[in-house]
Image 1 (cartoon, rainbow, N blue to C red):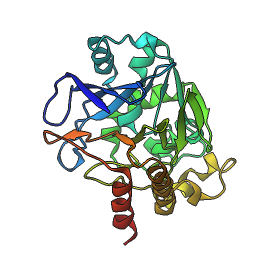
Image 2 (image 1 turned 60 degrees about the horizontal axis):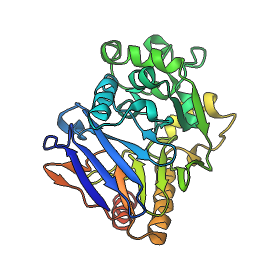
Image 3 (image 1 turned 180 degrees about the vertical axis):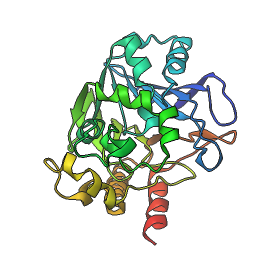
Amino acid sequence: MKKDILKKGDASGNGMVVKFQMPSGLEVISFPTKNPYGGQWDLGPTWNYVVLGDRPFLVDVGRWGQGKSLISMMEGAGFDPENLKFILITHGHEDHDGGLKDVIGVAGLKVKAHVTYDLMRRPYPQLSPGGYKLNFPARCWRCFMPESFYTKNCLGYHEFLRDLAVDTIGDNGASLDSGIRAIHLPGHSPDCLAVLLGKEGIIVGDVVLPDITPWPTSLEMFETVAPVIRQKYTDGERLFGLESYIRSLKKLQAVAKEIPDIAIFPAHRLYYDDKWACINLSERVEELLVHHVH
């Protein structure tokens, strides 16, 4: 795989624009946007990717407030966002879908995500925990942050999500373009999707990260949101908890066995501490399995 740095960034990868070219000629351009939590929450930027197939599309859009920066990065690299056909969201965490409002506003794009993303992005006041969470989207009902944090950081984000139109992808995944497919890998979040780029690469979101392990969801979360999703999902372990995450890792293990040299595009720390992460999918999945199981 060829790698061409179109724009240099800082030591964590912020602002870096990189074009990757697969042996087939398929190009993927990365646009990492700032994700400034700091301290133990320093994941580095969110790496958003444009896949330049027959139907160009964008994977993830960074945090709330980063959409305009993402648009500027694309335009600075000579790519017109209006040439995109759609946006795919790997999962419903704010550092991955927060920039949707700005990007959709410029390009008028459709959004694709897993069916549970669509269900859990909505508020259900009659089912919610009440209090200041009365109008929270279901996916945020277990949020431990205080009301002051929500009021400052989340209000606009939540309001935007309520009216978002989503083209849903089911558990069996979906074809996105010629030879390119979305696959469902729940565990870190019930709606996690990865993008399999033929037999050459895979955009994994937060399912597999270098240096750090994703935080699996808990089965308790299913009990909280069950009234919202039970019509489609009666078994919480299918989507939530460590066992669900382990099953998803084993799916990736099978991919690695079939395609040993597959290129990995994670959502965080592809470049960090002034160095590139060299990820072997089989080895990294095995490390994560050992970490979580033993």
